[in-house]
Length: 201
Image (cartoon, rainbow, N blue to C red; front, side, top):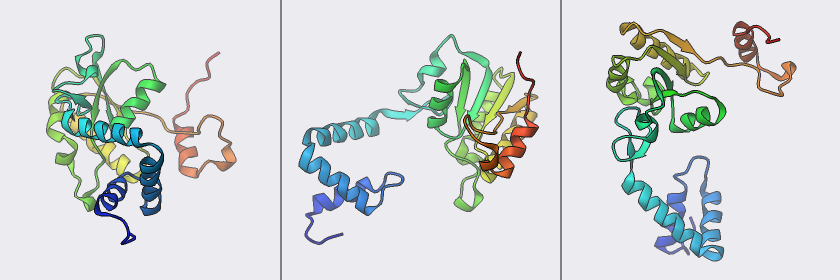
């Protein structure tokens, strides 16, 4: 980074690089934009970051972000506690809520099994998941990614559920809406074919 930058500007650019997909040049552009054209936005960003750091915690039941001990989904009496969707990230919960009519509960792993990165069952909340499975859950729906790590994580979840006698299903992955078969990779097409279902009349 240019030595002409004062320490506070270097710090701002460095902090912006903590965001995924933001490199040095993008961080520098964002910093200059905020400083030169949107000082009010810079102040709002600073306040929001401080508030998020001070107020946001993980729900003690599902590990979703919340303010306090429990999230809104876990305290909602209209949610069905017999069904439990296990996802990798809080963003996955948001996706499920916006795209489906699912009304059960969730468990957020906070990642996926990756021994090479030092991420094992303990880092994914194994103890909390076991407690949830022992608490009246009648179906676990695995919604981890269709990656090698995601598949390994799904297998681990299935083993946990089996110990508690809870049946497990896995969301289907397949051809995206609007997708042409000739452009779909082989594993995706195979999964879509094996997960086929009857055509509704």
